[in-house]
Image 1 (tube, protein in one colour):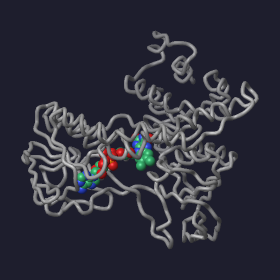
Image 2 (cartoon, protein in one colour):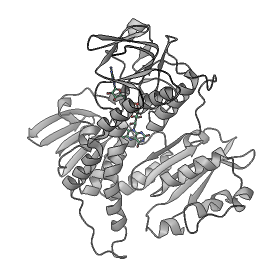
Image 3 (spheres, protein in one colour):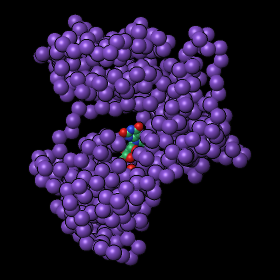
Length: 449
Ligand SMILES: Cc1cc2nc3c(=O)[nH]c(=O)nc-3n(C[C@H](O)[C@H](O)[C@H](O)COP(=O)(O)OP(=O)(O)OC[C@H]3O[C@@H](n4cnc5c(N)ncnc54)[C@H](O)[C@@H]3O)c2cc1C
């Protein structure tokens, strides 16, 4: 077996796979090393399985909002059937991906990689050399330090749970926590959410997040803000007592911690290759180059100033493939940011975020729009449909949008295109969109003054 390559990639998640395929297309000899599952987090225990589960949840919620308006009852989700369906879609992923890599002429190596020196990585006592090496080892859940933390489960356990007991507790109130809360409460679980401070979804506008949390509370989710877990005691096989530092005590059947993810940087022998790293990840410059000029780091494992999300991991991988094949010599330039929370309703944002805009009132104005009476939202009987536009005062251009509605992710993606193309109201009026649809609402946003 060949052991010398132009590029060696460590980690077969979205970042590693994307870079590998692109570099192979440029006719470089490439090998990729994976220690667990080809496809990494996204494909096996992240957004892909989550979206499969959400499909049934969203169907149930659509019926729920039409109770007495076309439906007289809401069907129950049969969790075990839904899991079987989801598992069937995910089961073959790792094998299919590995086969497609090999068919593309890429060498796949299964095992845990460790640096021996600047150009050599060892897997199961075999040395592999790369003129360049790319680290794409991703991240794992943060393990919180408190008495009884051995009873805690993580997001991958939730996404594979054979059954859901009546009461679950989620530690953390970030993007993943909201998706799990959404799925579990739609199944009929009583959900407790523990957040150490007052702030859920820190990257998003607190007022819209407040609306979302208020609605979820109305639906029965118990949010315990300003509560830090002190201990978990097992009372019975499937019953735990949770106590917080602030004195809150309650019983629950299972506890999932989604309180952040930490980069996989340990046990890689990074010191042997002179690679600087910290608890925030592998240090990289604006070319995604580590402190060793021949080694790069992409995706969740680096400390680049980008959200730890699939779309950014993929963007970094594409940038690096361009850089290594001299298609670009420029530093990485992140595009308009976009992100969505898969709650019900969803909250999503693109462009200049409201949180940033409010700090610069001399530059930006925020315009609020209540869309609940617009046909696209009203017909679905959506309880909340609100948007905040960020408008640049100098030229009255929309430069950012945050939206809270069941269609927020789609709306925001449209706006990512509109903002990138710097579309004006005049240009919009030169186009027609299928009516009635989300796109046929565009001019309402551009005509707010
Ligand atoms: C539950 C959940 C839901 C999410 N939902 C979304 C979402 O909706 N949208 C979104 O944009 N993002 C989402 N994310 C985040 C997204 O999954 C990550 O940002 C993305 O997977 C990062 O990709 P990566 O390639 O950097 O890392 P990973 O996908 O984690 O891949 C890293 C790979 O490296 C391998 N590896 C590690 N160490 C070694 C070693 N020493 N040798 C060999 N291989 C090694 C690992 O086994 C792993 O397969 C979600 C994450 C989770 C956990």
